[in-house]
Image: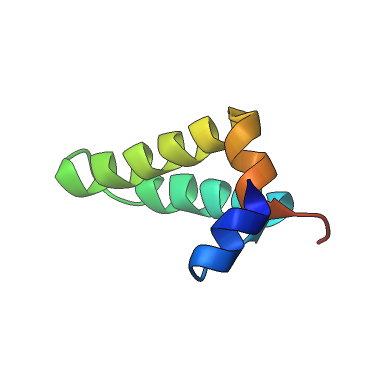
Length: 67
């Protein structure tokens, strides 16, 4: 699946560690805001990243080995 996807368009590939850092930083950033819509948006983004990290098909398609 990855090869067909890569041939059809430009696709951003991520390292798993990069996604984990992105999730952690998003959560920390959310905690800096008082309760409200802005904080909720950042928390939702972190939850979405968590969901992607649990999705094996997505990881197989959009991640690479490495740092």
